[in-house]
Image (cartoon, rainbow, N blue to C red):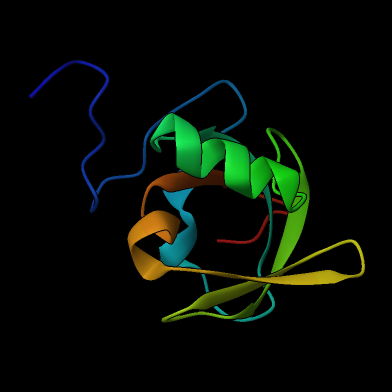
Length: 94
C-alpha cells in the first residue's frame, strides 16, 4: 500500500482535520471536498456539474446513488465514485 493510500475505515489526516469518504456521511451532513481520487474523465464530468475542489455540499440522501446538494442543485453520485471522494466535515460534525 502506498503512503498516499487511504484506508476506508481510518480517516485520513490533514491540517483541516480528518478526511472521510463522502459515502460514509449521513443525511444532512455538510462537508467540503478535500480530494477526489477519481479517473480524470470522472473528475471532469463532476466538475462540469458543479462538484469542484473545495466546494461545500450537503448530503441529501446517502446510499446508491448518493444524492448531494451543491448550492441549489441536487446531484446523484454513484456509490463507487462517492467512496473515492474525501471530504472535511463542516460545523464540527462527527
